[in-house]
Image (cartoon, rainbow, N blue to C red; front, side, top):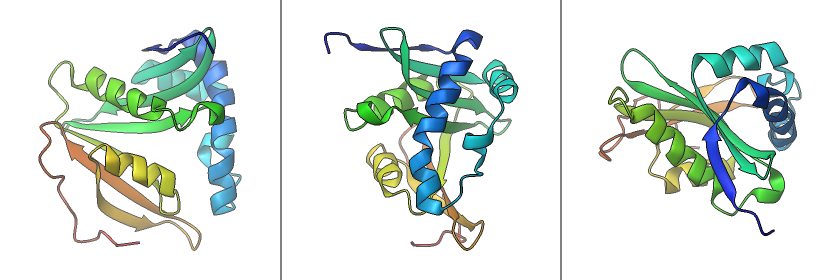
Length: 172
């Protein structure tokens, strides 16, 4: 390609590109769960702009094109909640998702408030689960949302010690 991907802070001017990429990236998840009404596919632009203003958000750029993004915030108990890791389908499989996760973890722990990192994905999203496990995340709980979907929550601690587990964790 001749250009390298850079990761920077997302700004309000990135909202439209992020929303379009989010819509593209969540098509495969919607098909997997037969749910085209999931929030990432129906999120209004104004809600995304508000979300970007509230927490940390990063974008991966190839030139001026947004080809990846991730969002997160640290809650009162020191849990960095990571969300909506997306990578353009043509850019998947090259380590960009791992780079984005590492960058958001670093950003959210810069002030020392993050004690652990937490994210979630659907139980059938095997490529997501594999990536998260490879990066040190371990399942801590599984919640059945519907007949089609169970949400797996994964965690890792900032210091690399084992994630806390819940007795409600199901093996899928």
